[in-house]
Length: 213
Image 1: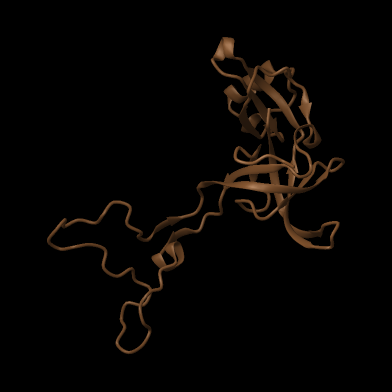
Image 2: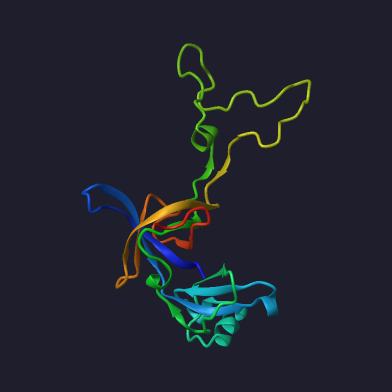
């Protein structure tokens, strides 16, 4: 099992042993409880379903309450995520995983989260269009300009960059290096930025394209 659930705490900076300043994002990872186990014989694939945080039973659906009850949990997890495994997991239902059980210093991670929502935006903000002139007869300013042809094909090409809803979508940042692991506090210090606002939930996995040193 190569992943855990966490929250984004915020950004800061640390110094390495050579005195170099490194911008990092602090992630509160785990503890995560094992809610369900998937095996190749029963389900056709191997995976571990983890729960993170807790929520009141009145705010959870009956399916979520029943799911937590079958795992022997007292509280319903606030977030559930499933992580594929190479072989059938040897974990037990209800067992708790800490950050040091999965991740270590110098590991590389893929972090998935929901980016900040920006609402309805024009092409200048959404797609970094230059816009038109603000002087010398320019009357279009922040407008997109021409978007198609009148005769052929006489329609707007699919995928054309236009105004619309910006943000609030899932994004994954790959190959983020772990700079430091604070086991006692359950924190990961990851080089660079991760998607989403402070306090946002994240799915954290070991990188599929790189390996640790």
